[in-house]
Amino acid sequence: MNVKNLMAELERKHPGESEYLQAVQEVLESIEEVYNQHPEFEKAKIVERIVEPDRIFTFRVTWVDDKGEVQTNLGYRVQFNSAIGPYKGGLRFHKAVNPSMLKFLGFEQTFKNALTTLPMGGAKGGSDFDPVGKSDAEIMRFCQAFMTELWNNIGVDTDVPAGDVGVGGREIGFLNGMYQKLARKYHTGVLTGKGMTWGGSELRPEATGYGALYFVQHMLDKAGKSLKGATVAISGFGNVAWGAAQKATELGAKVIAISGPDGVIYNPNGMTDEKIDYMLELRASNRNIVAPFAERFPDATFTPGKKAWSVKCDIALPCAFQNELNGDDAKELIANGTWCCAEVSNMGCTPEAIHAFQSAGVLFAPGKAVNAGGVATSGLEMTQNCMHISWSGKEVDEKLHYIMESIHEACVKYGTQEDGTVNYVKGANIAGFMKVATAMLEQGII
Ligand code: 2IT
Image 1 (tube, helix red, strand yellow):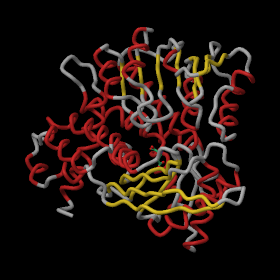
Image 2: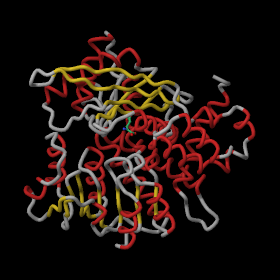
Image 3: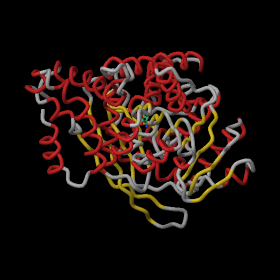
Image 4: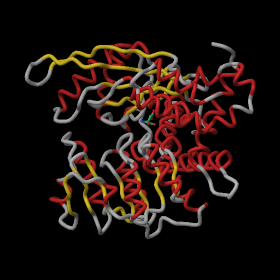
């Protein structure tokens, strides 16, 4: 394999798909050396196959808003790779959703799911529907309209969607209701992230953030550091940021920043249960602003237009969106003494930021390892649904712990460098790739 030639070919085939090309390039650069030691991969053209999705469904979603006006959005499902199991991955509702974004997410999901130890292939989907400012009734009508197109392409053993940015428990409820009505199939396992009374798993809402902090714990242990007393800056205030803030606080760290598109909240005294609960209220309001946090809690201050990375912290946890932490942000963090950055969002850091962290000796781990606890717990939800049982929160948490530890071990196995430190980007990419590539190789040319 020659990364430069492969990337040139992909750029020619998929011009302008910047997020997708960025995600592919990162993985190819990490695996190049190992790949070239496997002539059987080269012969089966594994890499040329693995970078292209199996298929993409694109559809129109038409619905009527509260004013009676007809609205039209685009809907997608990218079924990326099914070599190790049925397609699995979230749905993102965000105004910037396009095929490039969903292809990058589906590609990342394929390797992330491989890391979880569970048998799940990779997928992603969503819509350019913008939930900001929408009423609950509008969100319901949109979800129903979206499912009228999607239902025929998903299923318990084929493709199992879940939430992502803009899709939480409320949306999964509306989507599942419509799925059952259309498909006349009442298996509880066709979507994950369900409510607790209709097949949801304990701890699924918390799992992405909790899993991320378990991973960070292992990473810090290995480096002889600890979360205790560390200051943490978190971007975002949604489901992922909420779980991360909760677990970081429980493990003895102080969460001193959260942020939104409108600016940053500086929270010098750390989180309380009340503050963490309020994050849920902020999210549910559909306004996508974080400023009211400082009105509600006077010991916190709001600065408009600033990112979480402007706050001096030990540990930075991007929990919002891709490329939300760039090279300049990384430099600012490094100058302020940050010694660890773990991506909790998918591809939260730009390549320049990752490079800056790695050159400065900042502990860095990529999203597909750090945030895999979310989809792993979705996998556990599928298992419970298929067994028609539900595990206690304690049982799910134990399994989540084990999975995050396994992912950390896989990163160490494939990412340990000559000086004994771990390159987690390389480790995660090689570990995920080796599993999917081997599965593809053993199942022939299809
Ligand atoms: O990015 C992700 O891993 C998710 N949005 C969760 C996907 C899932 O199927 O639970």
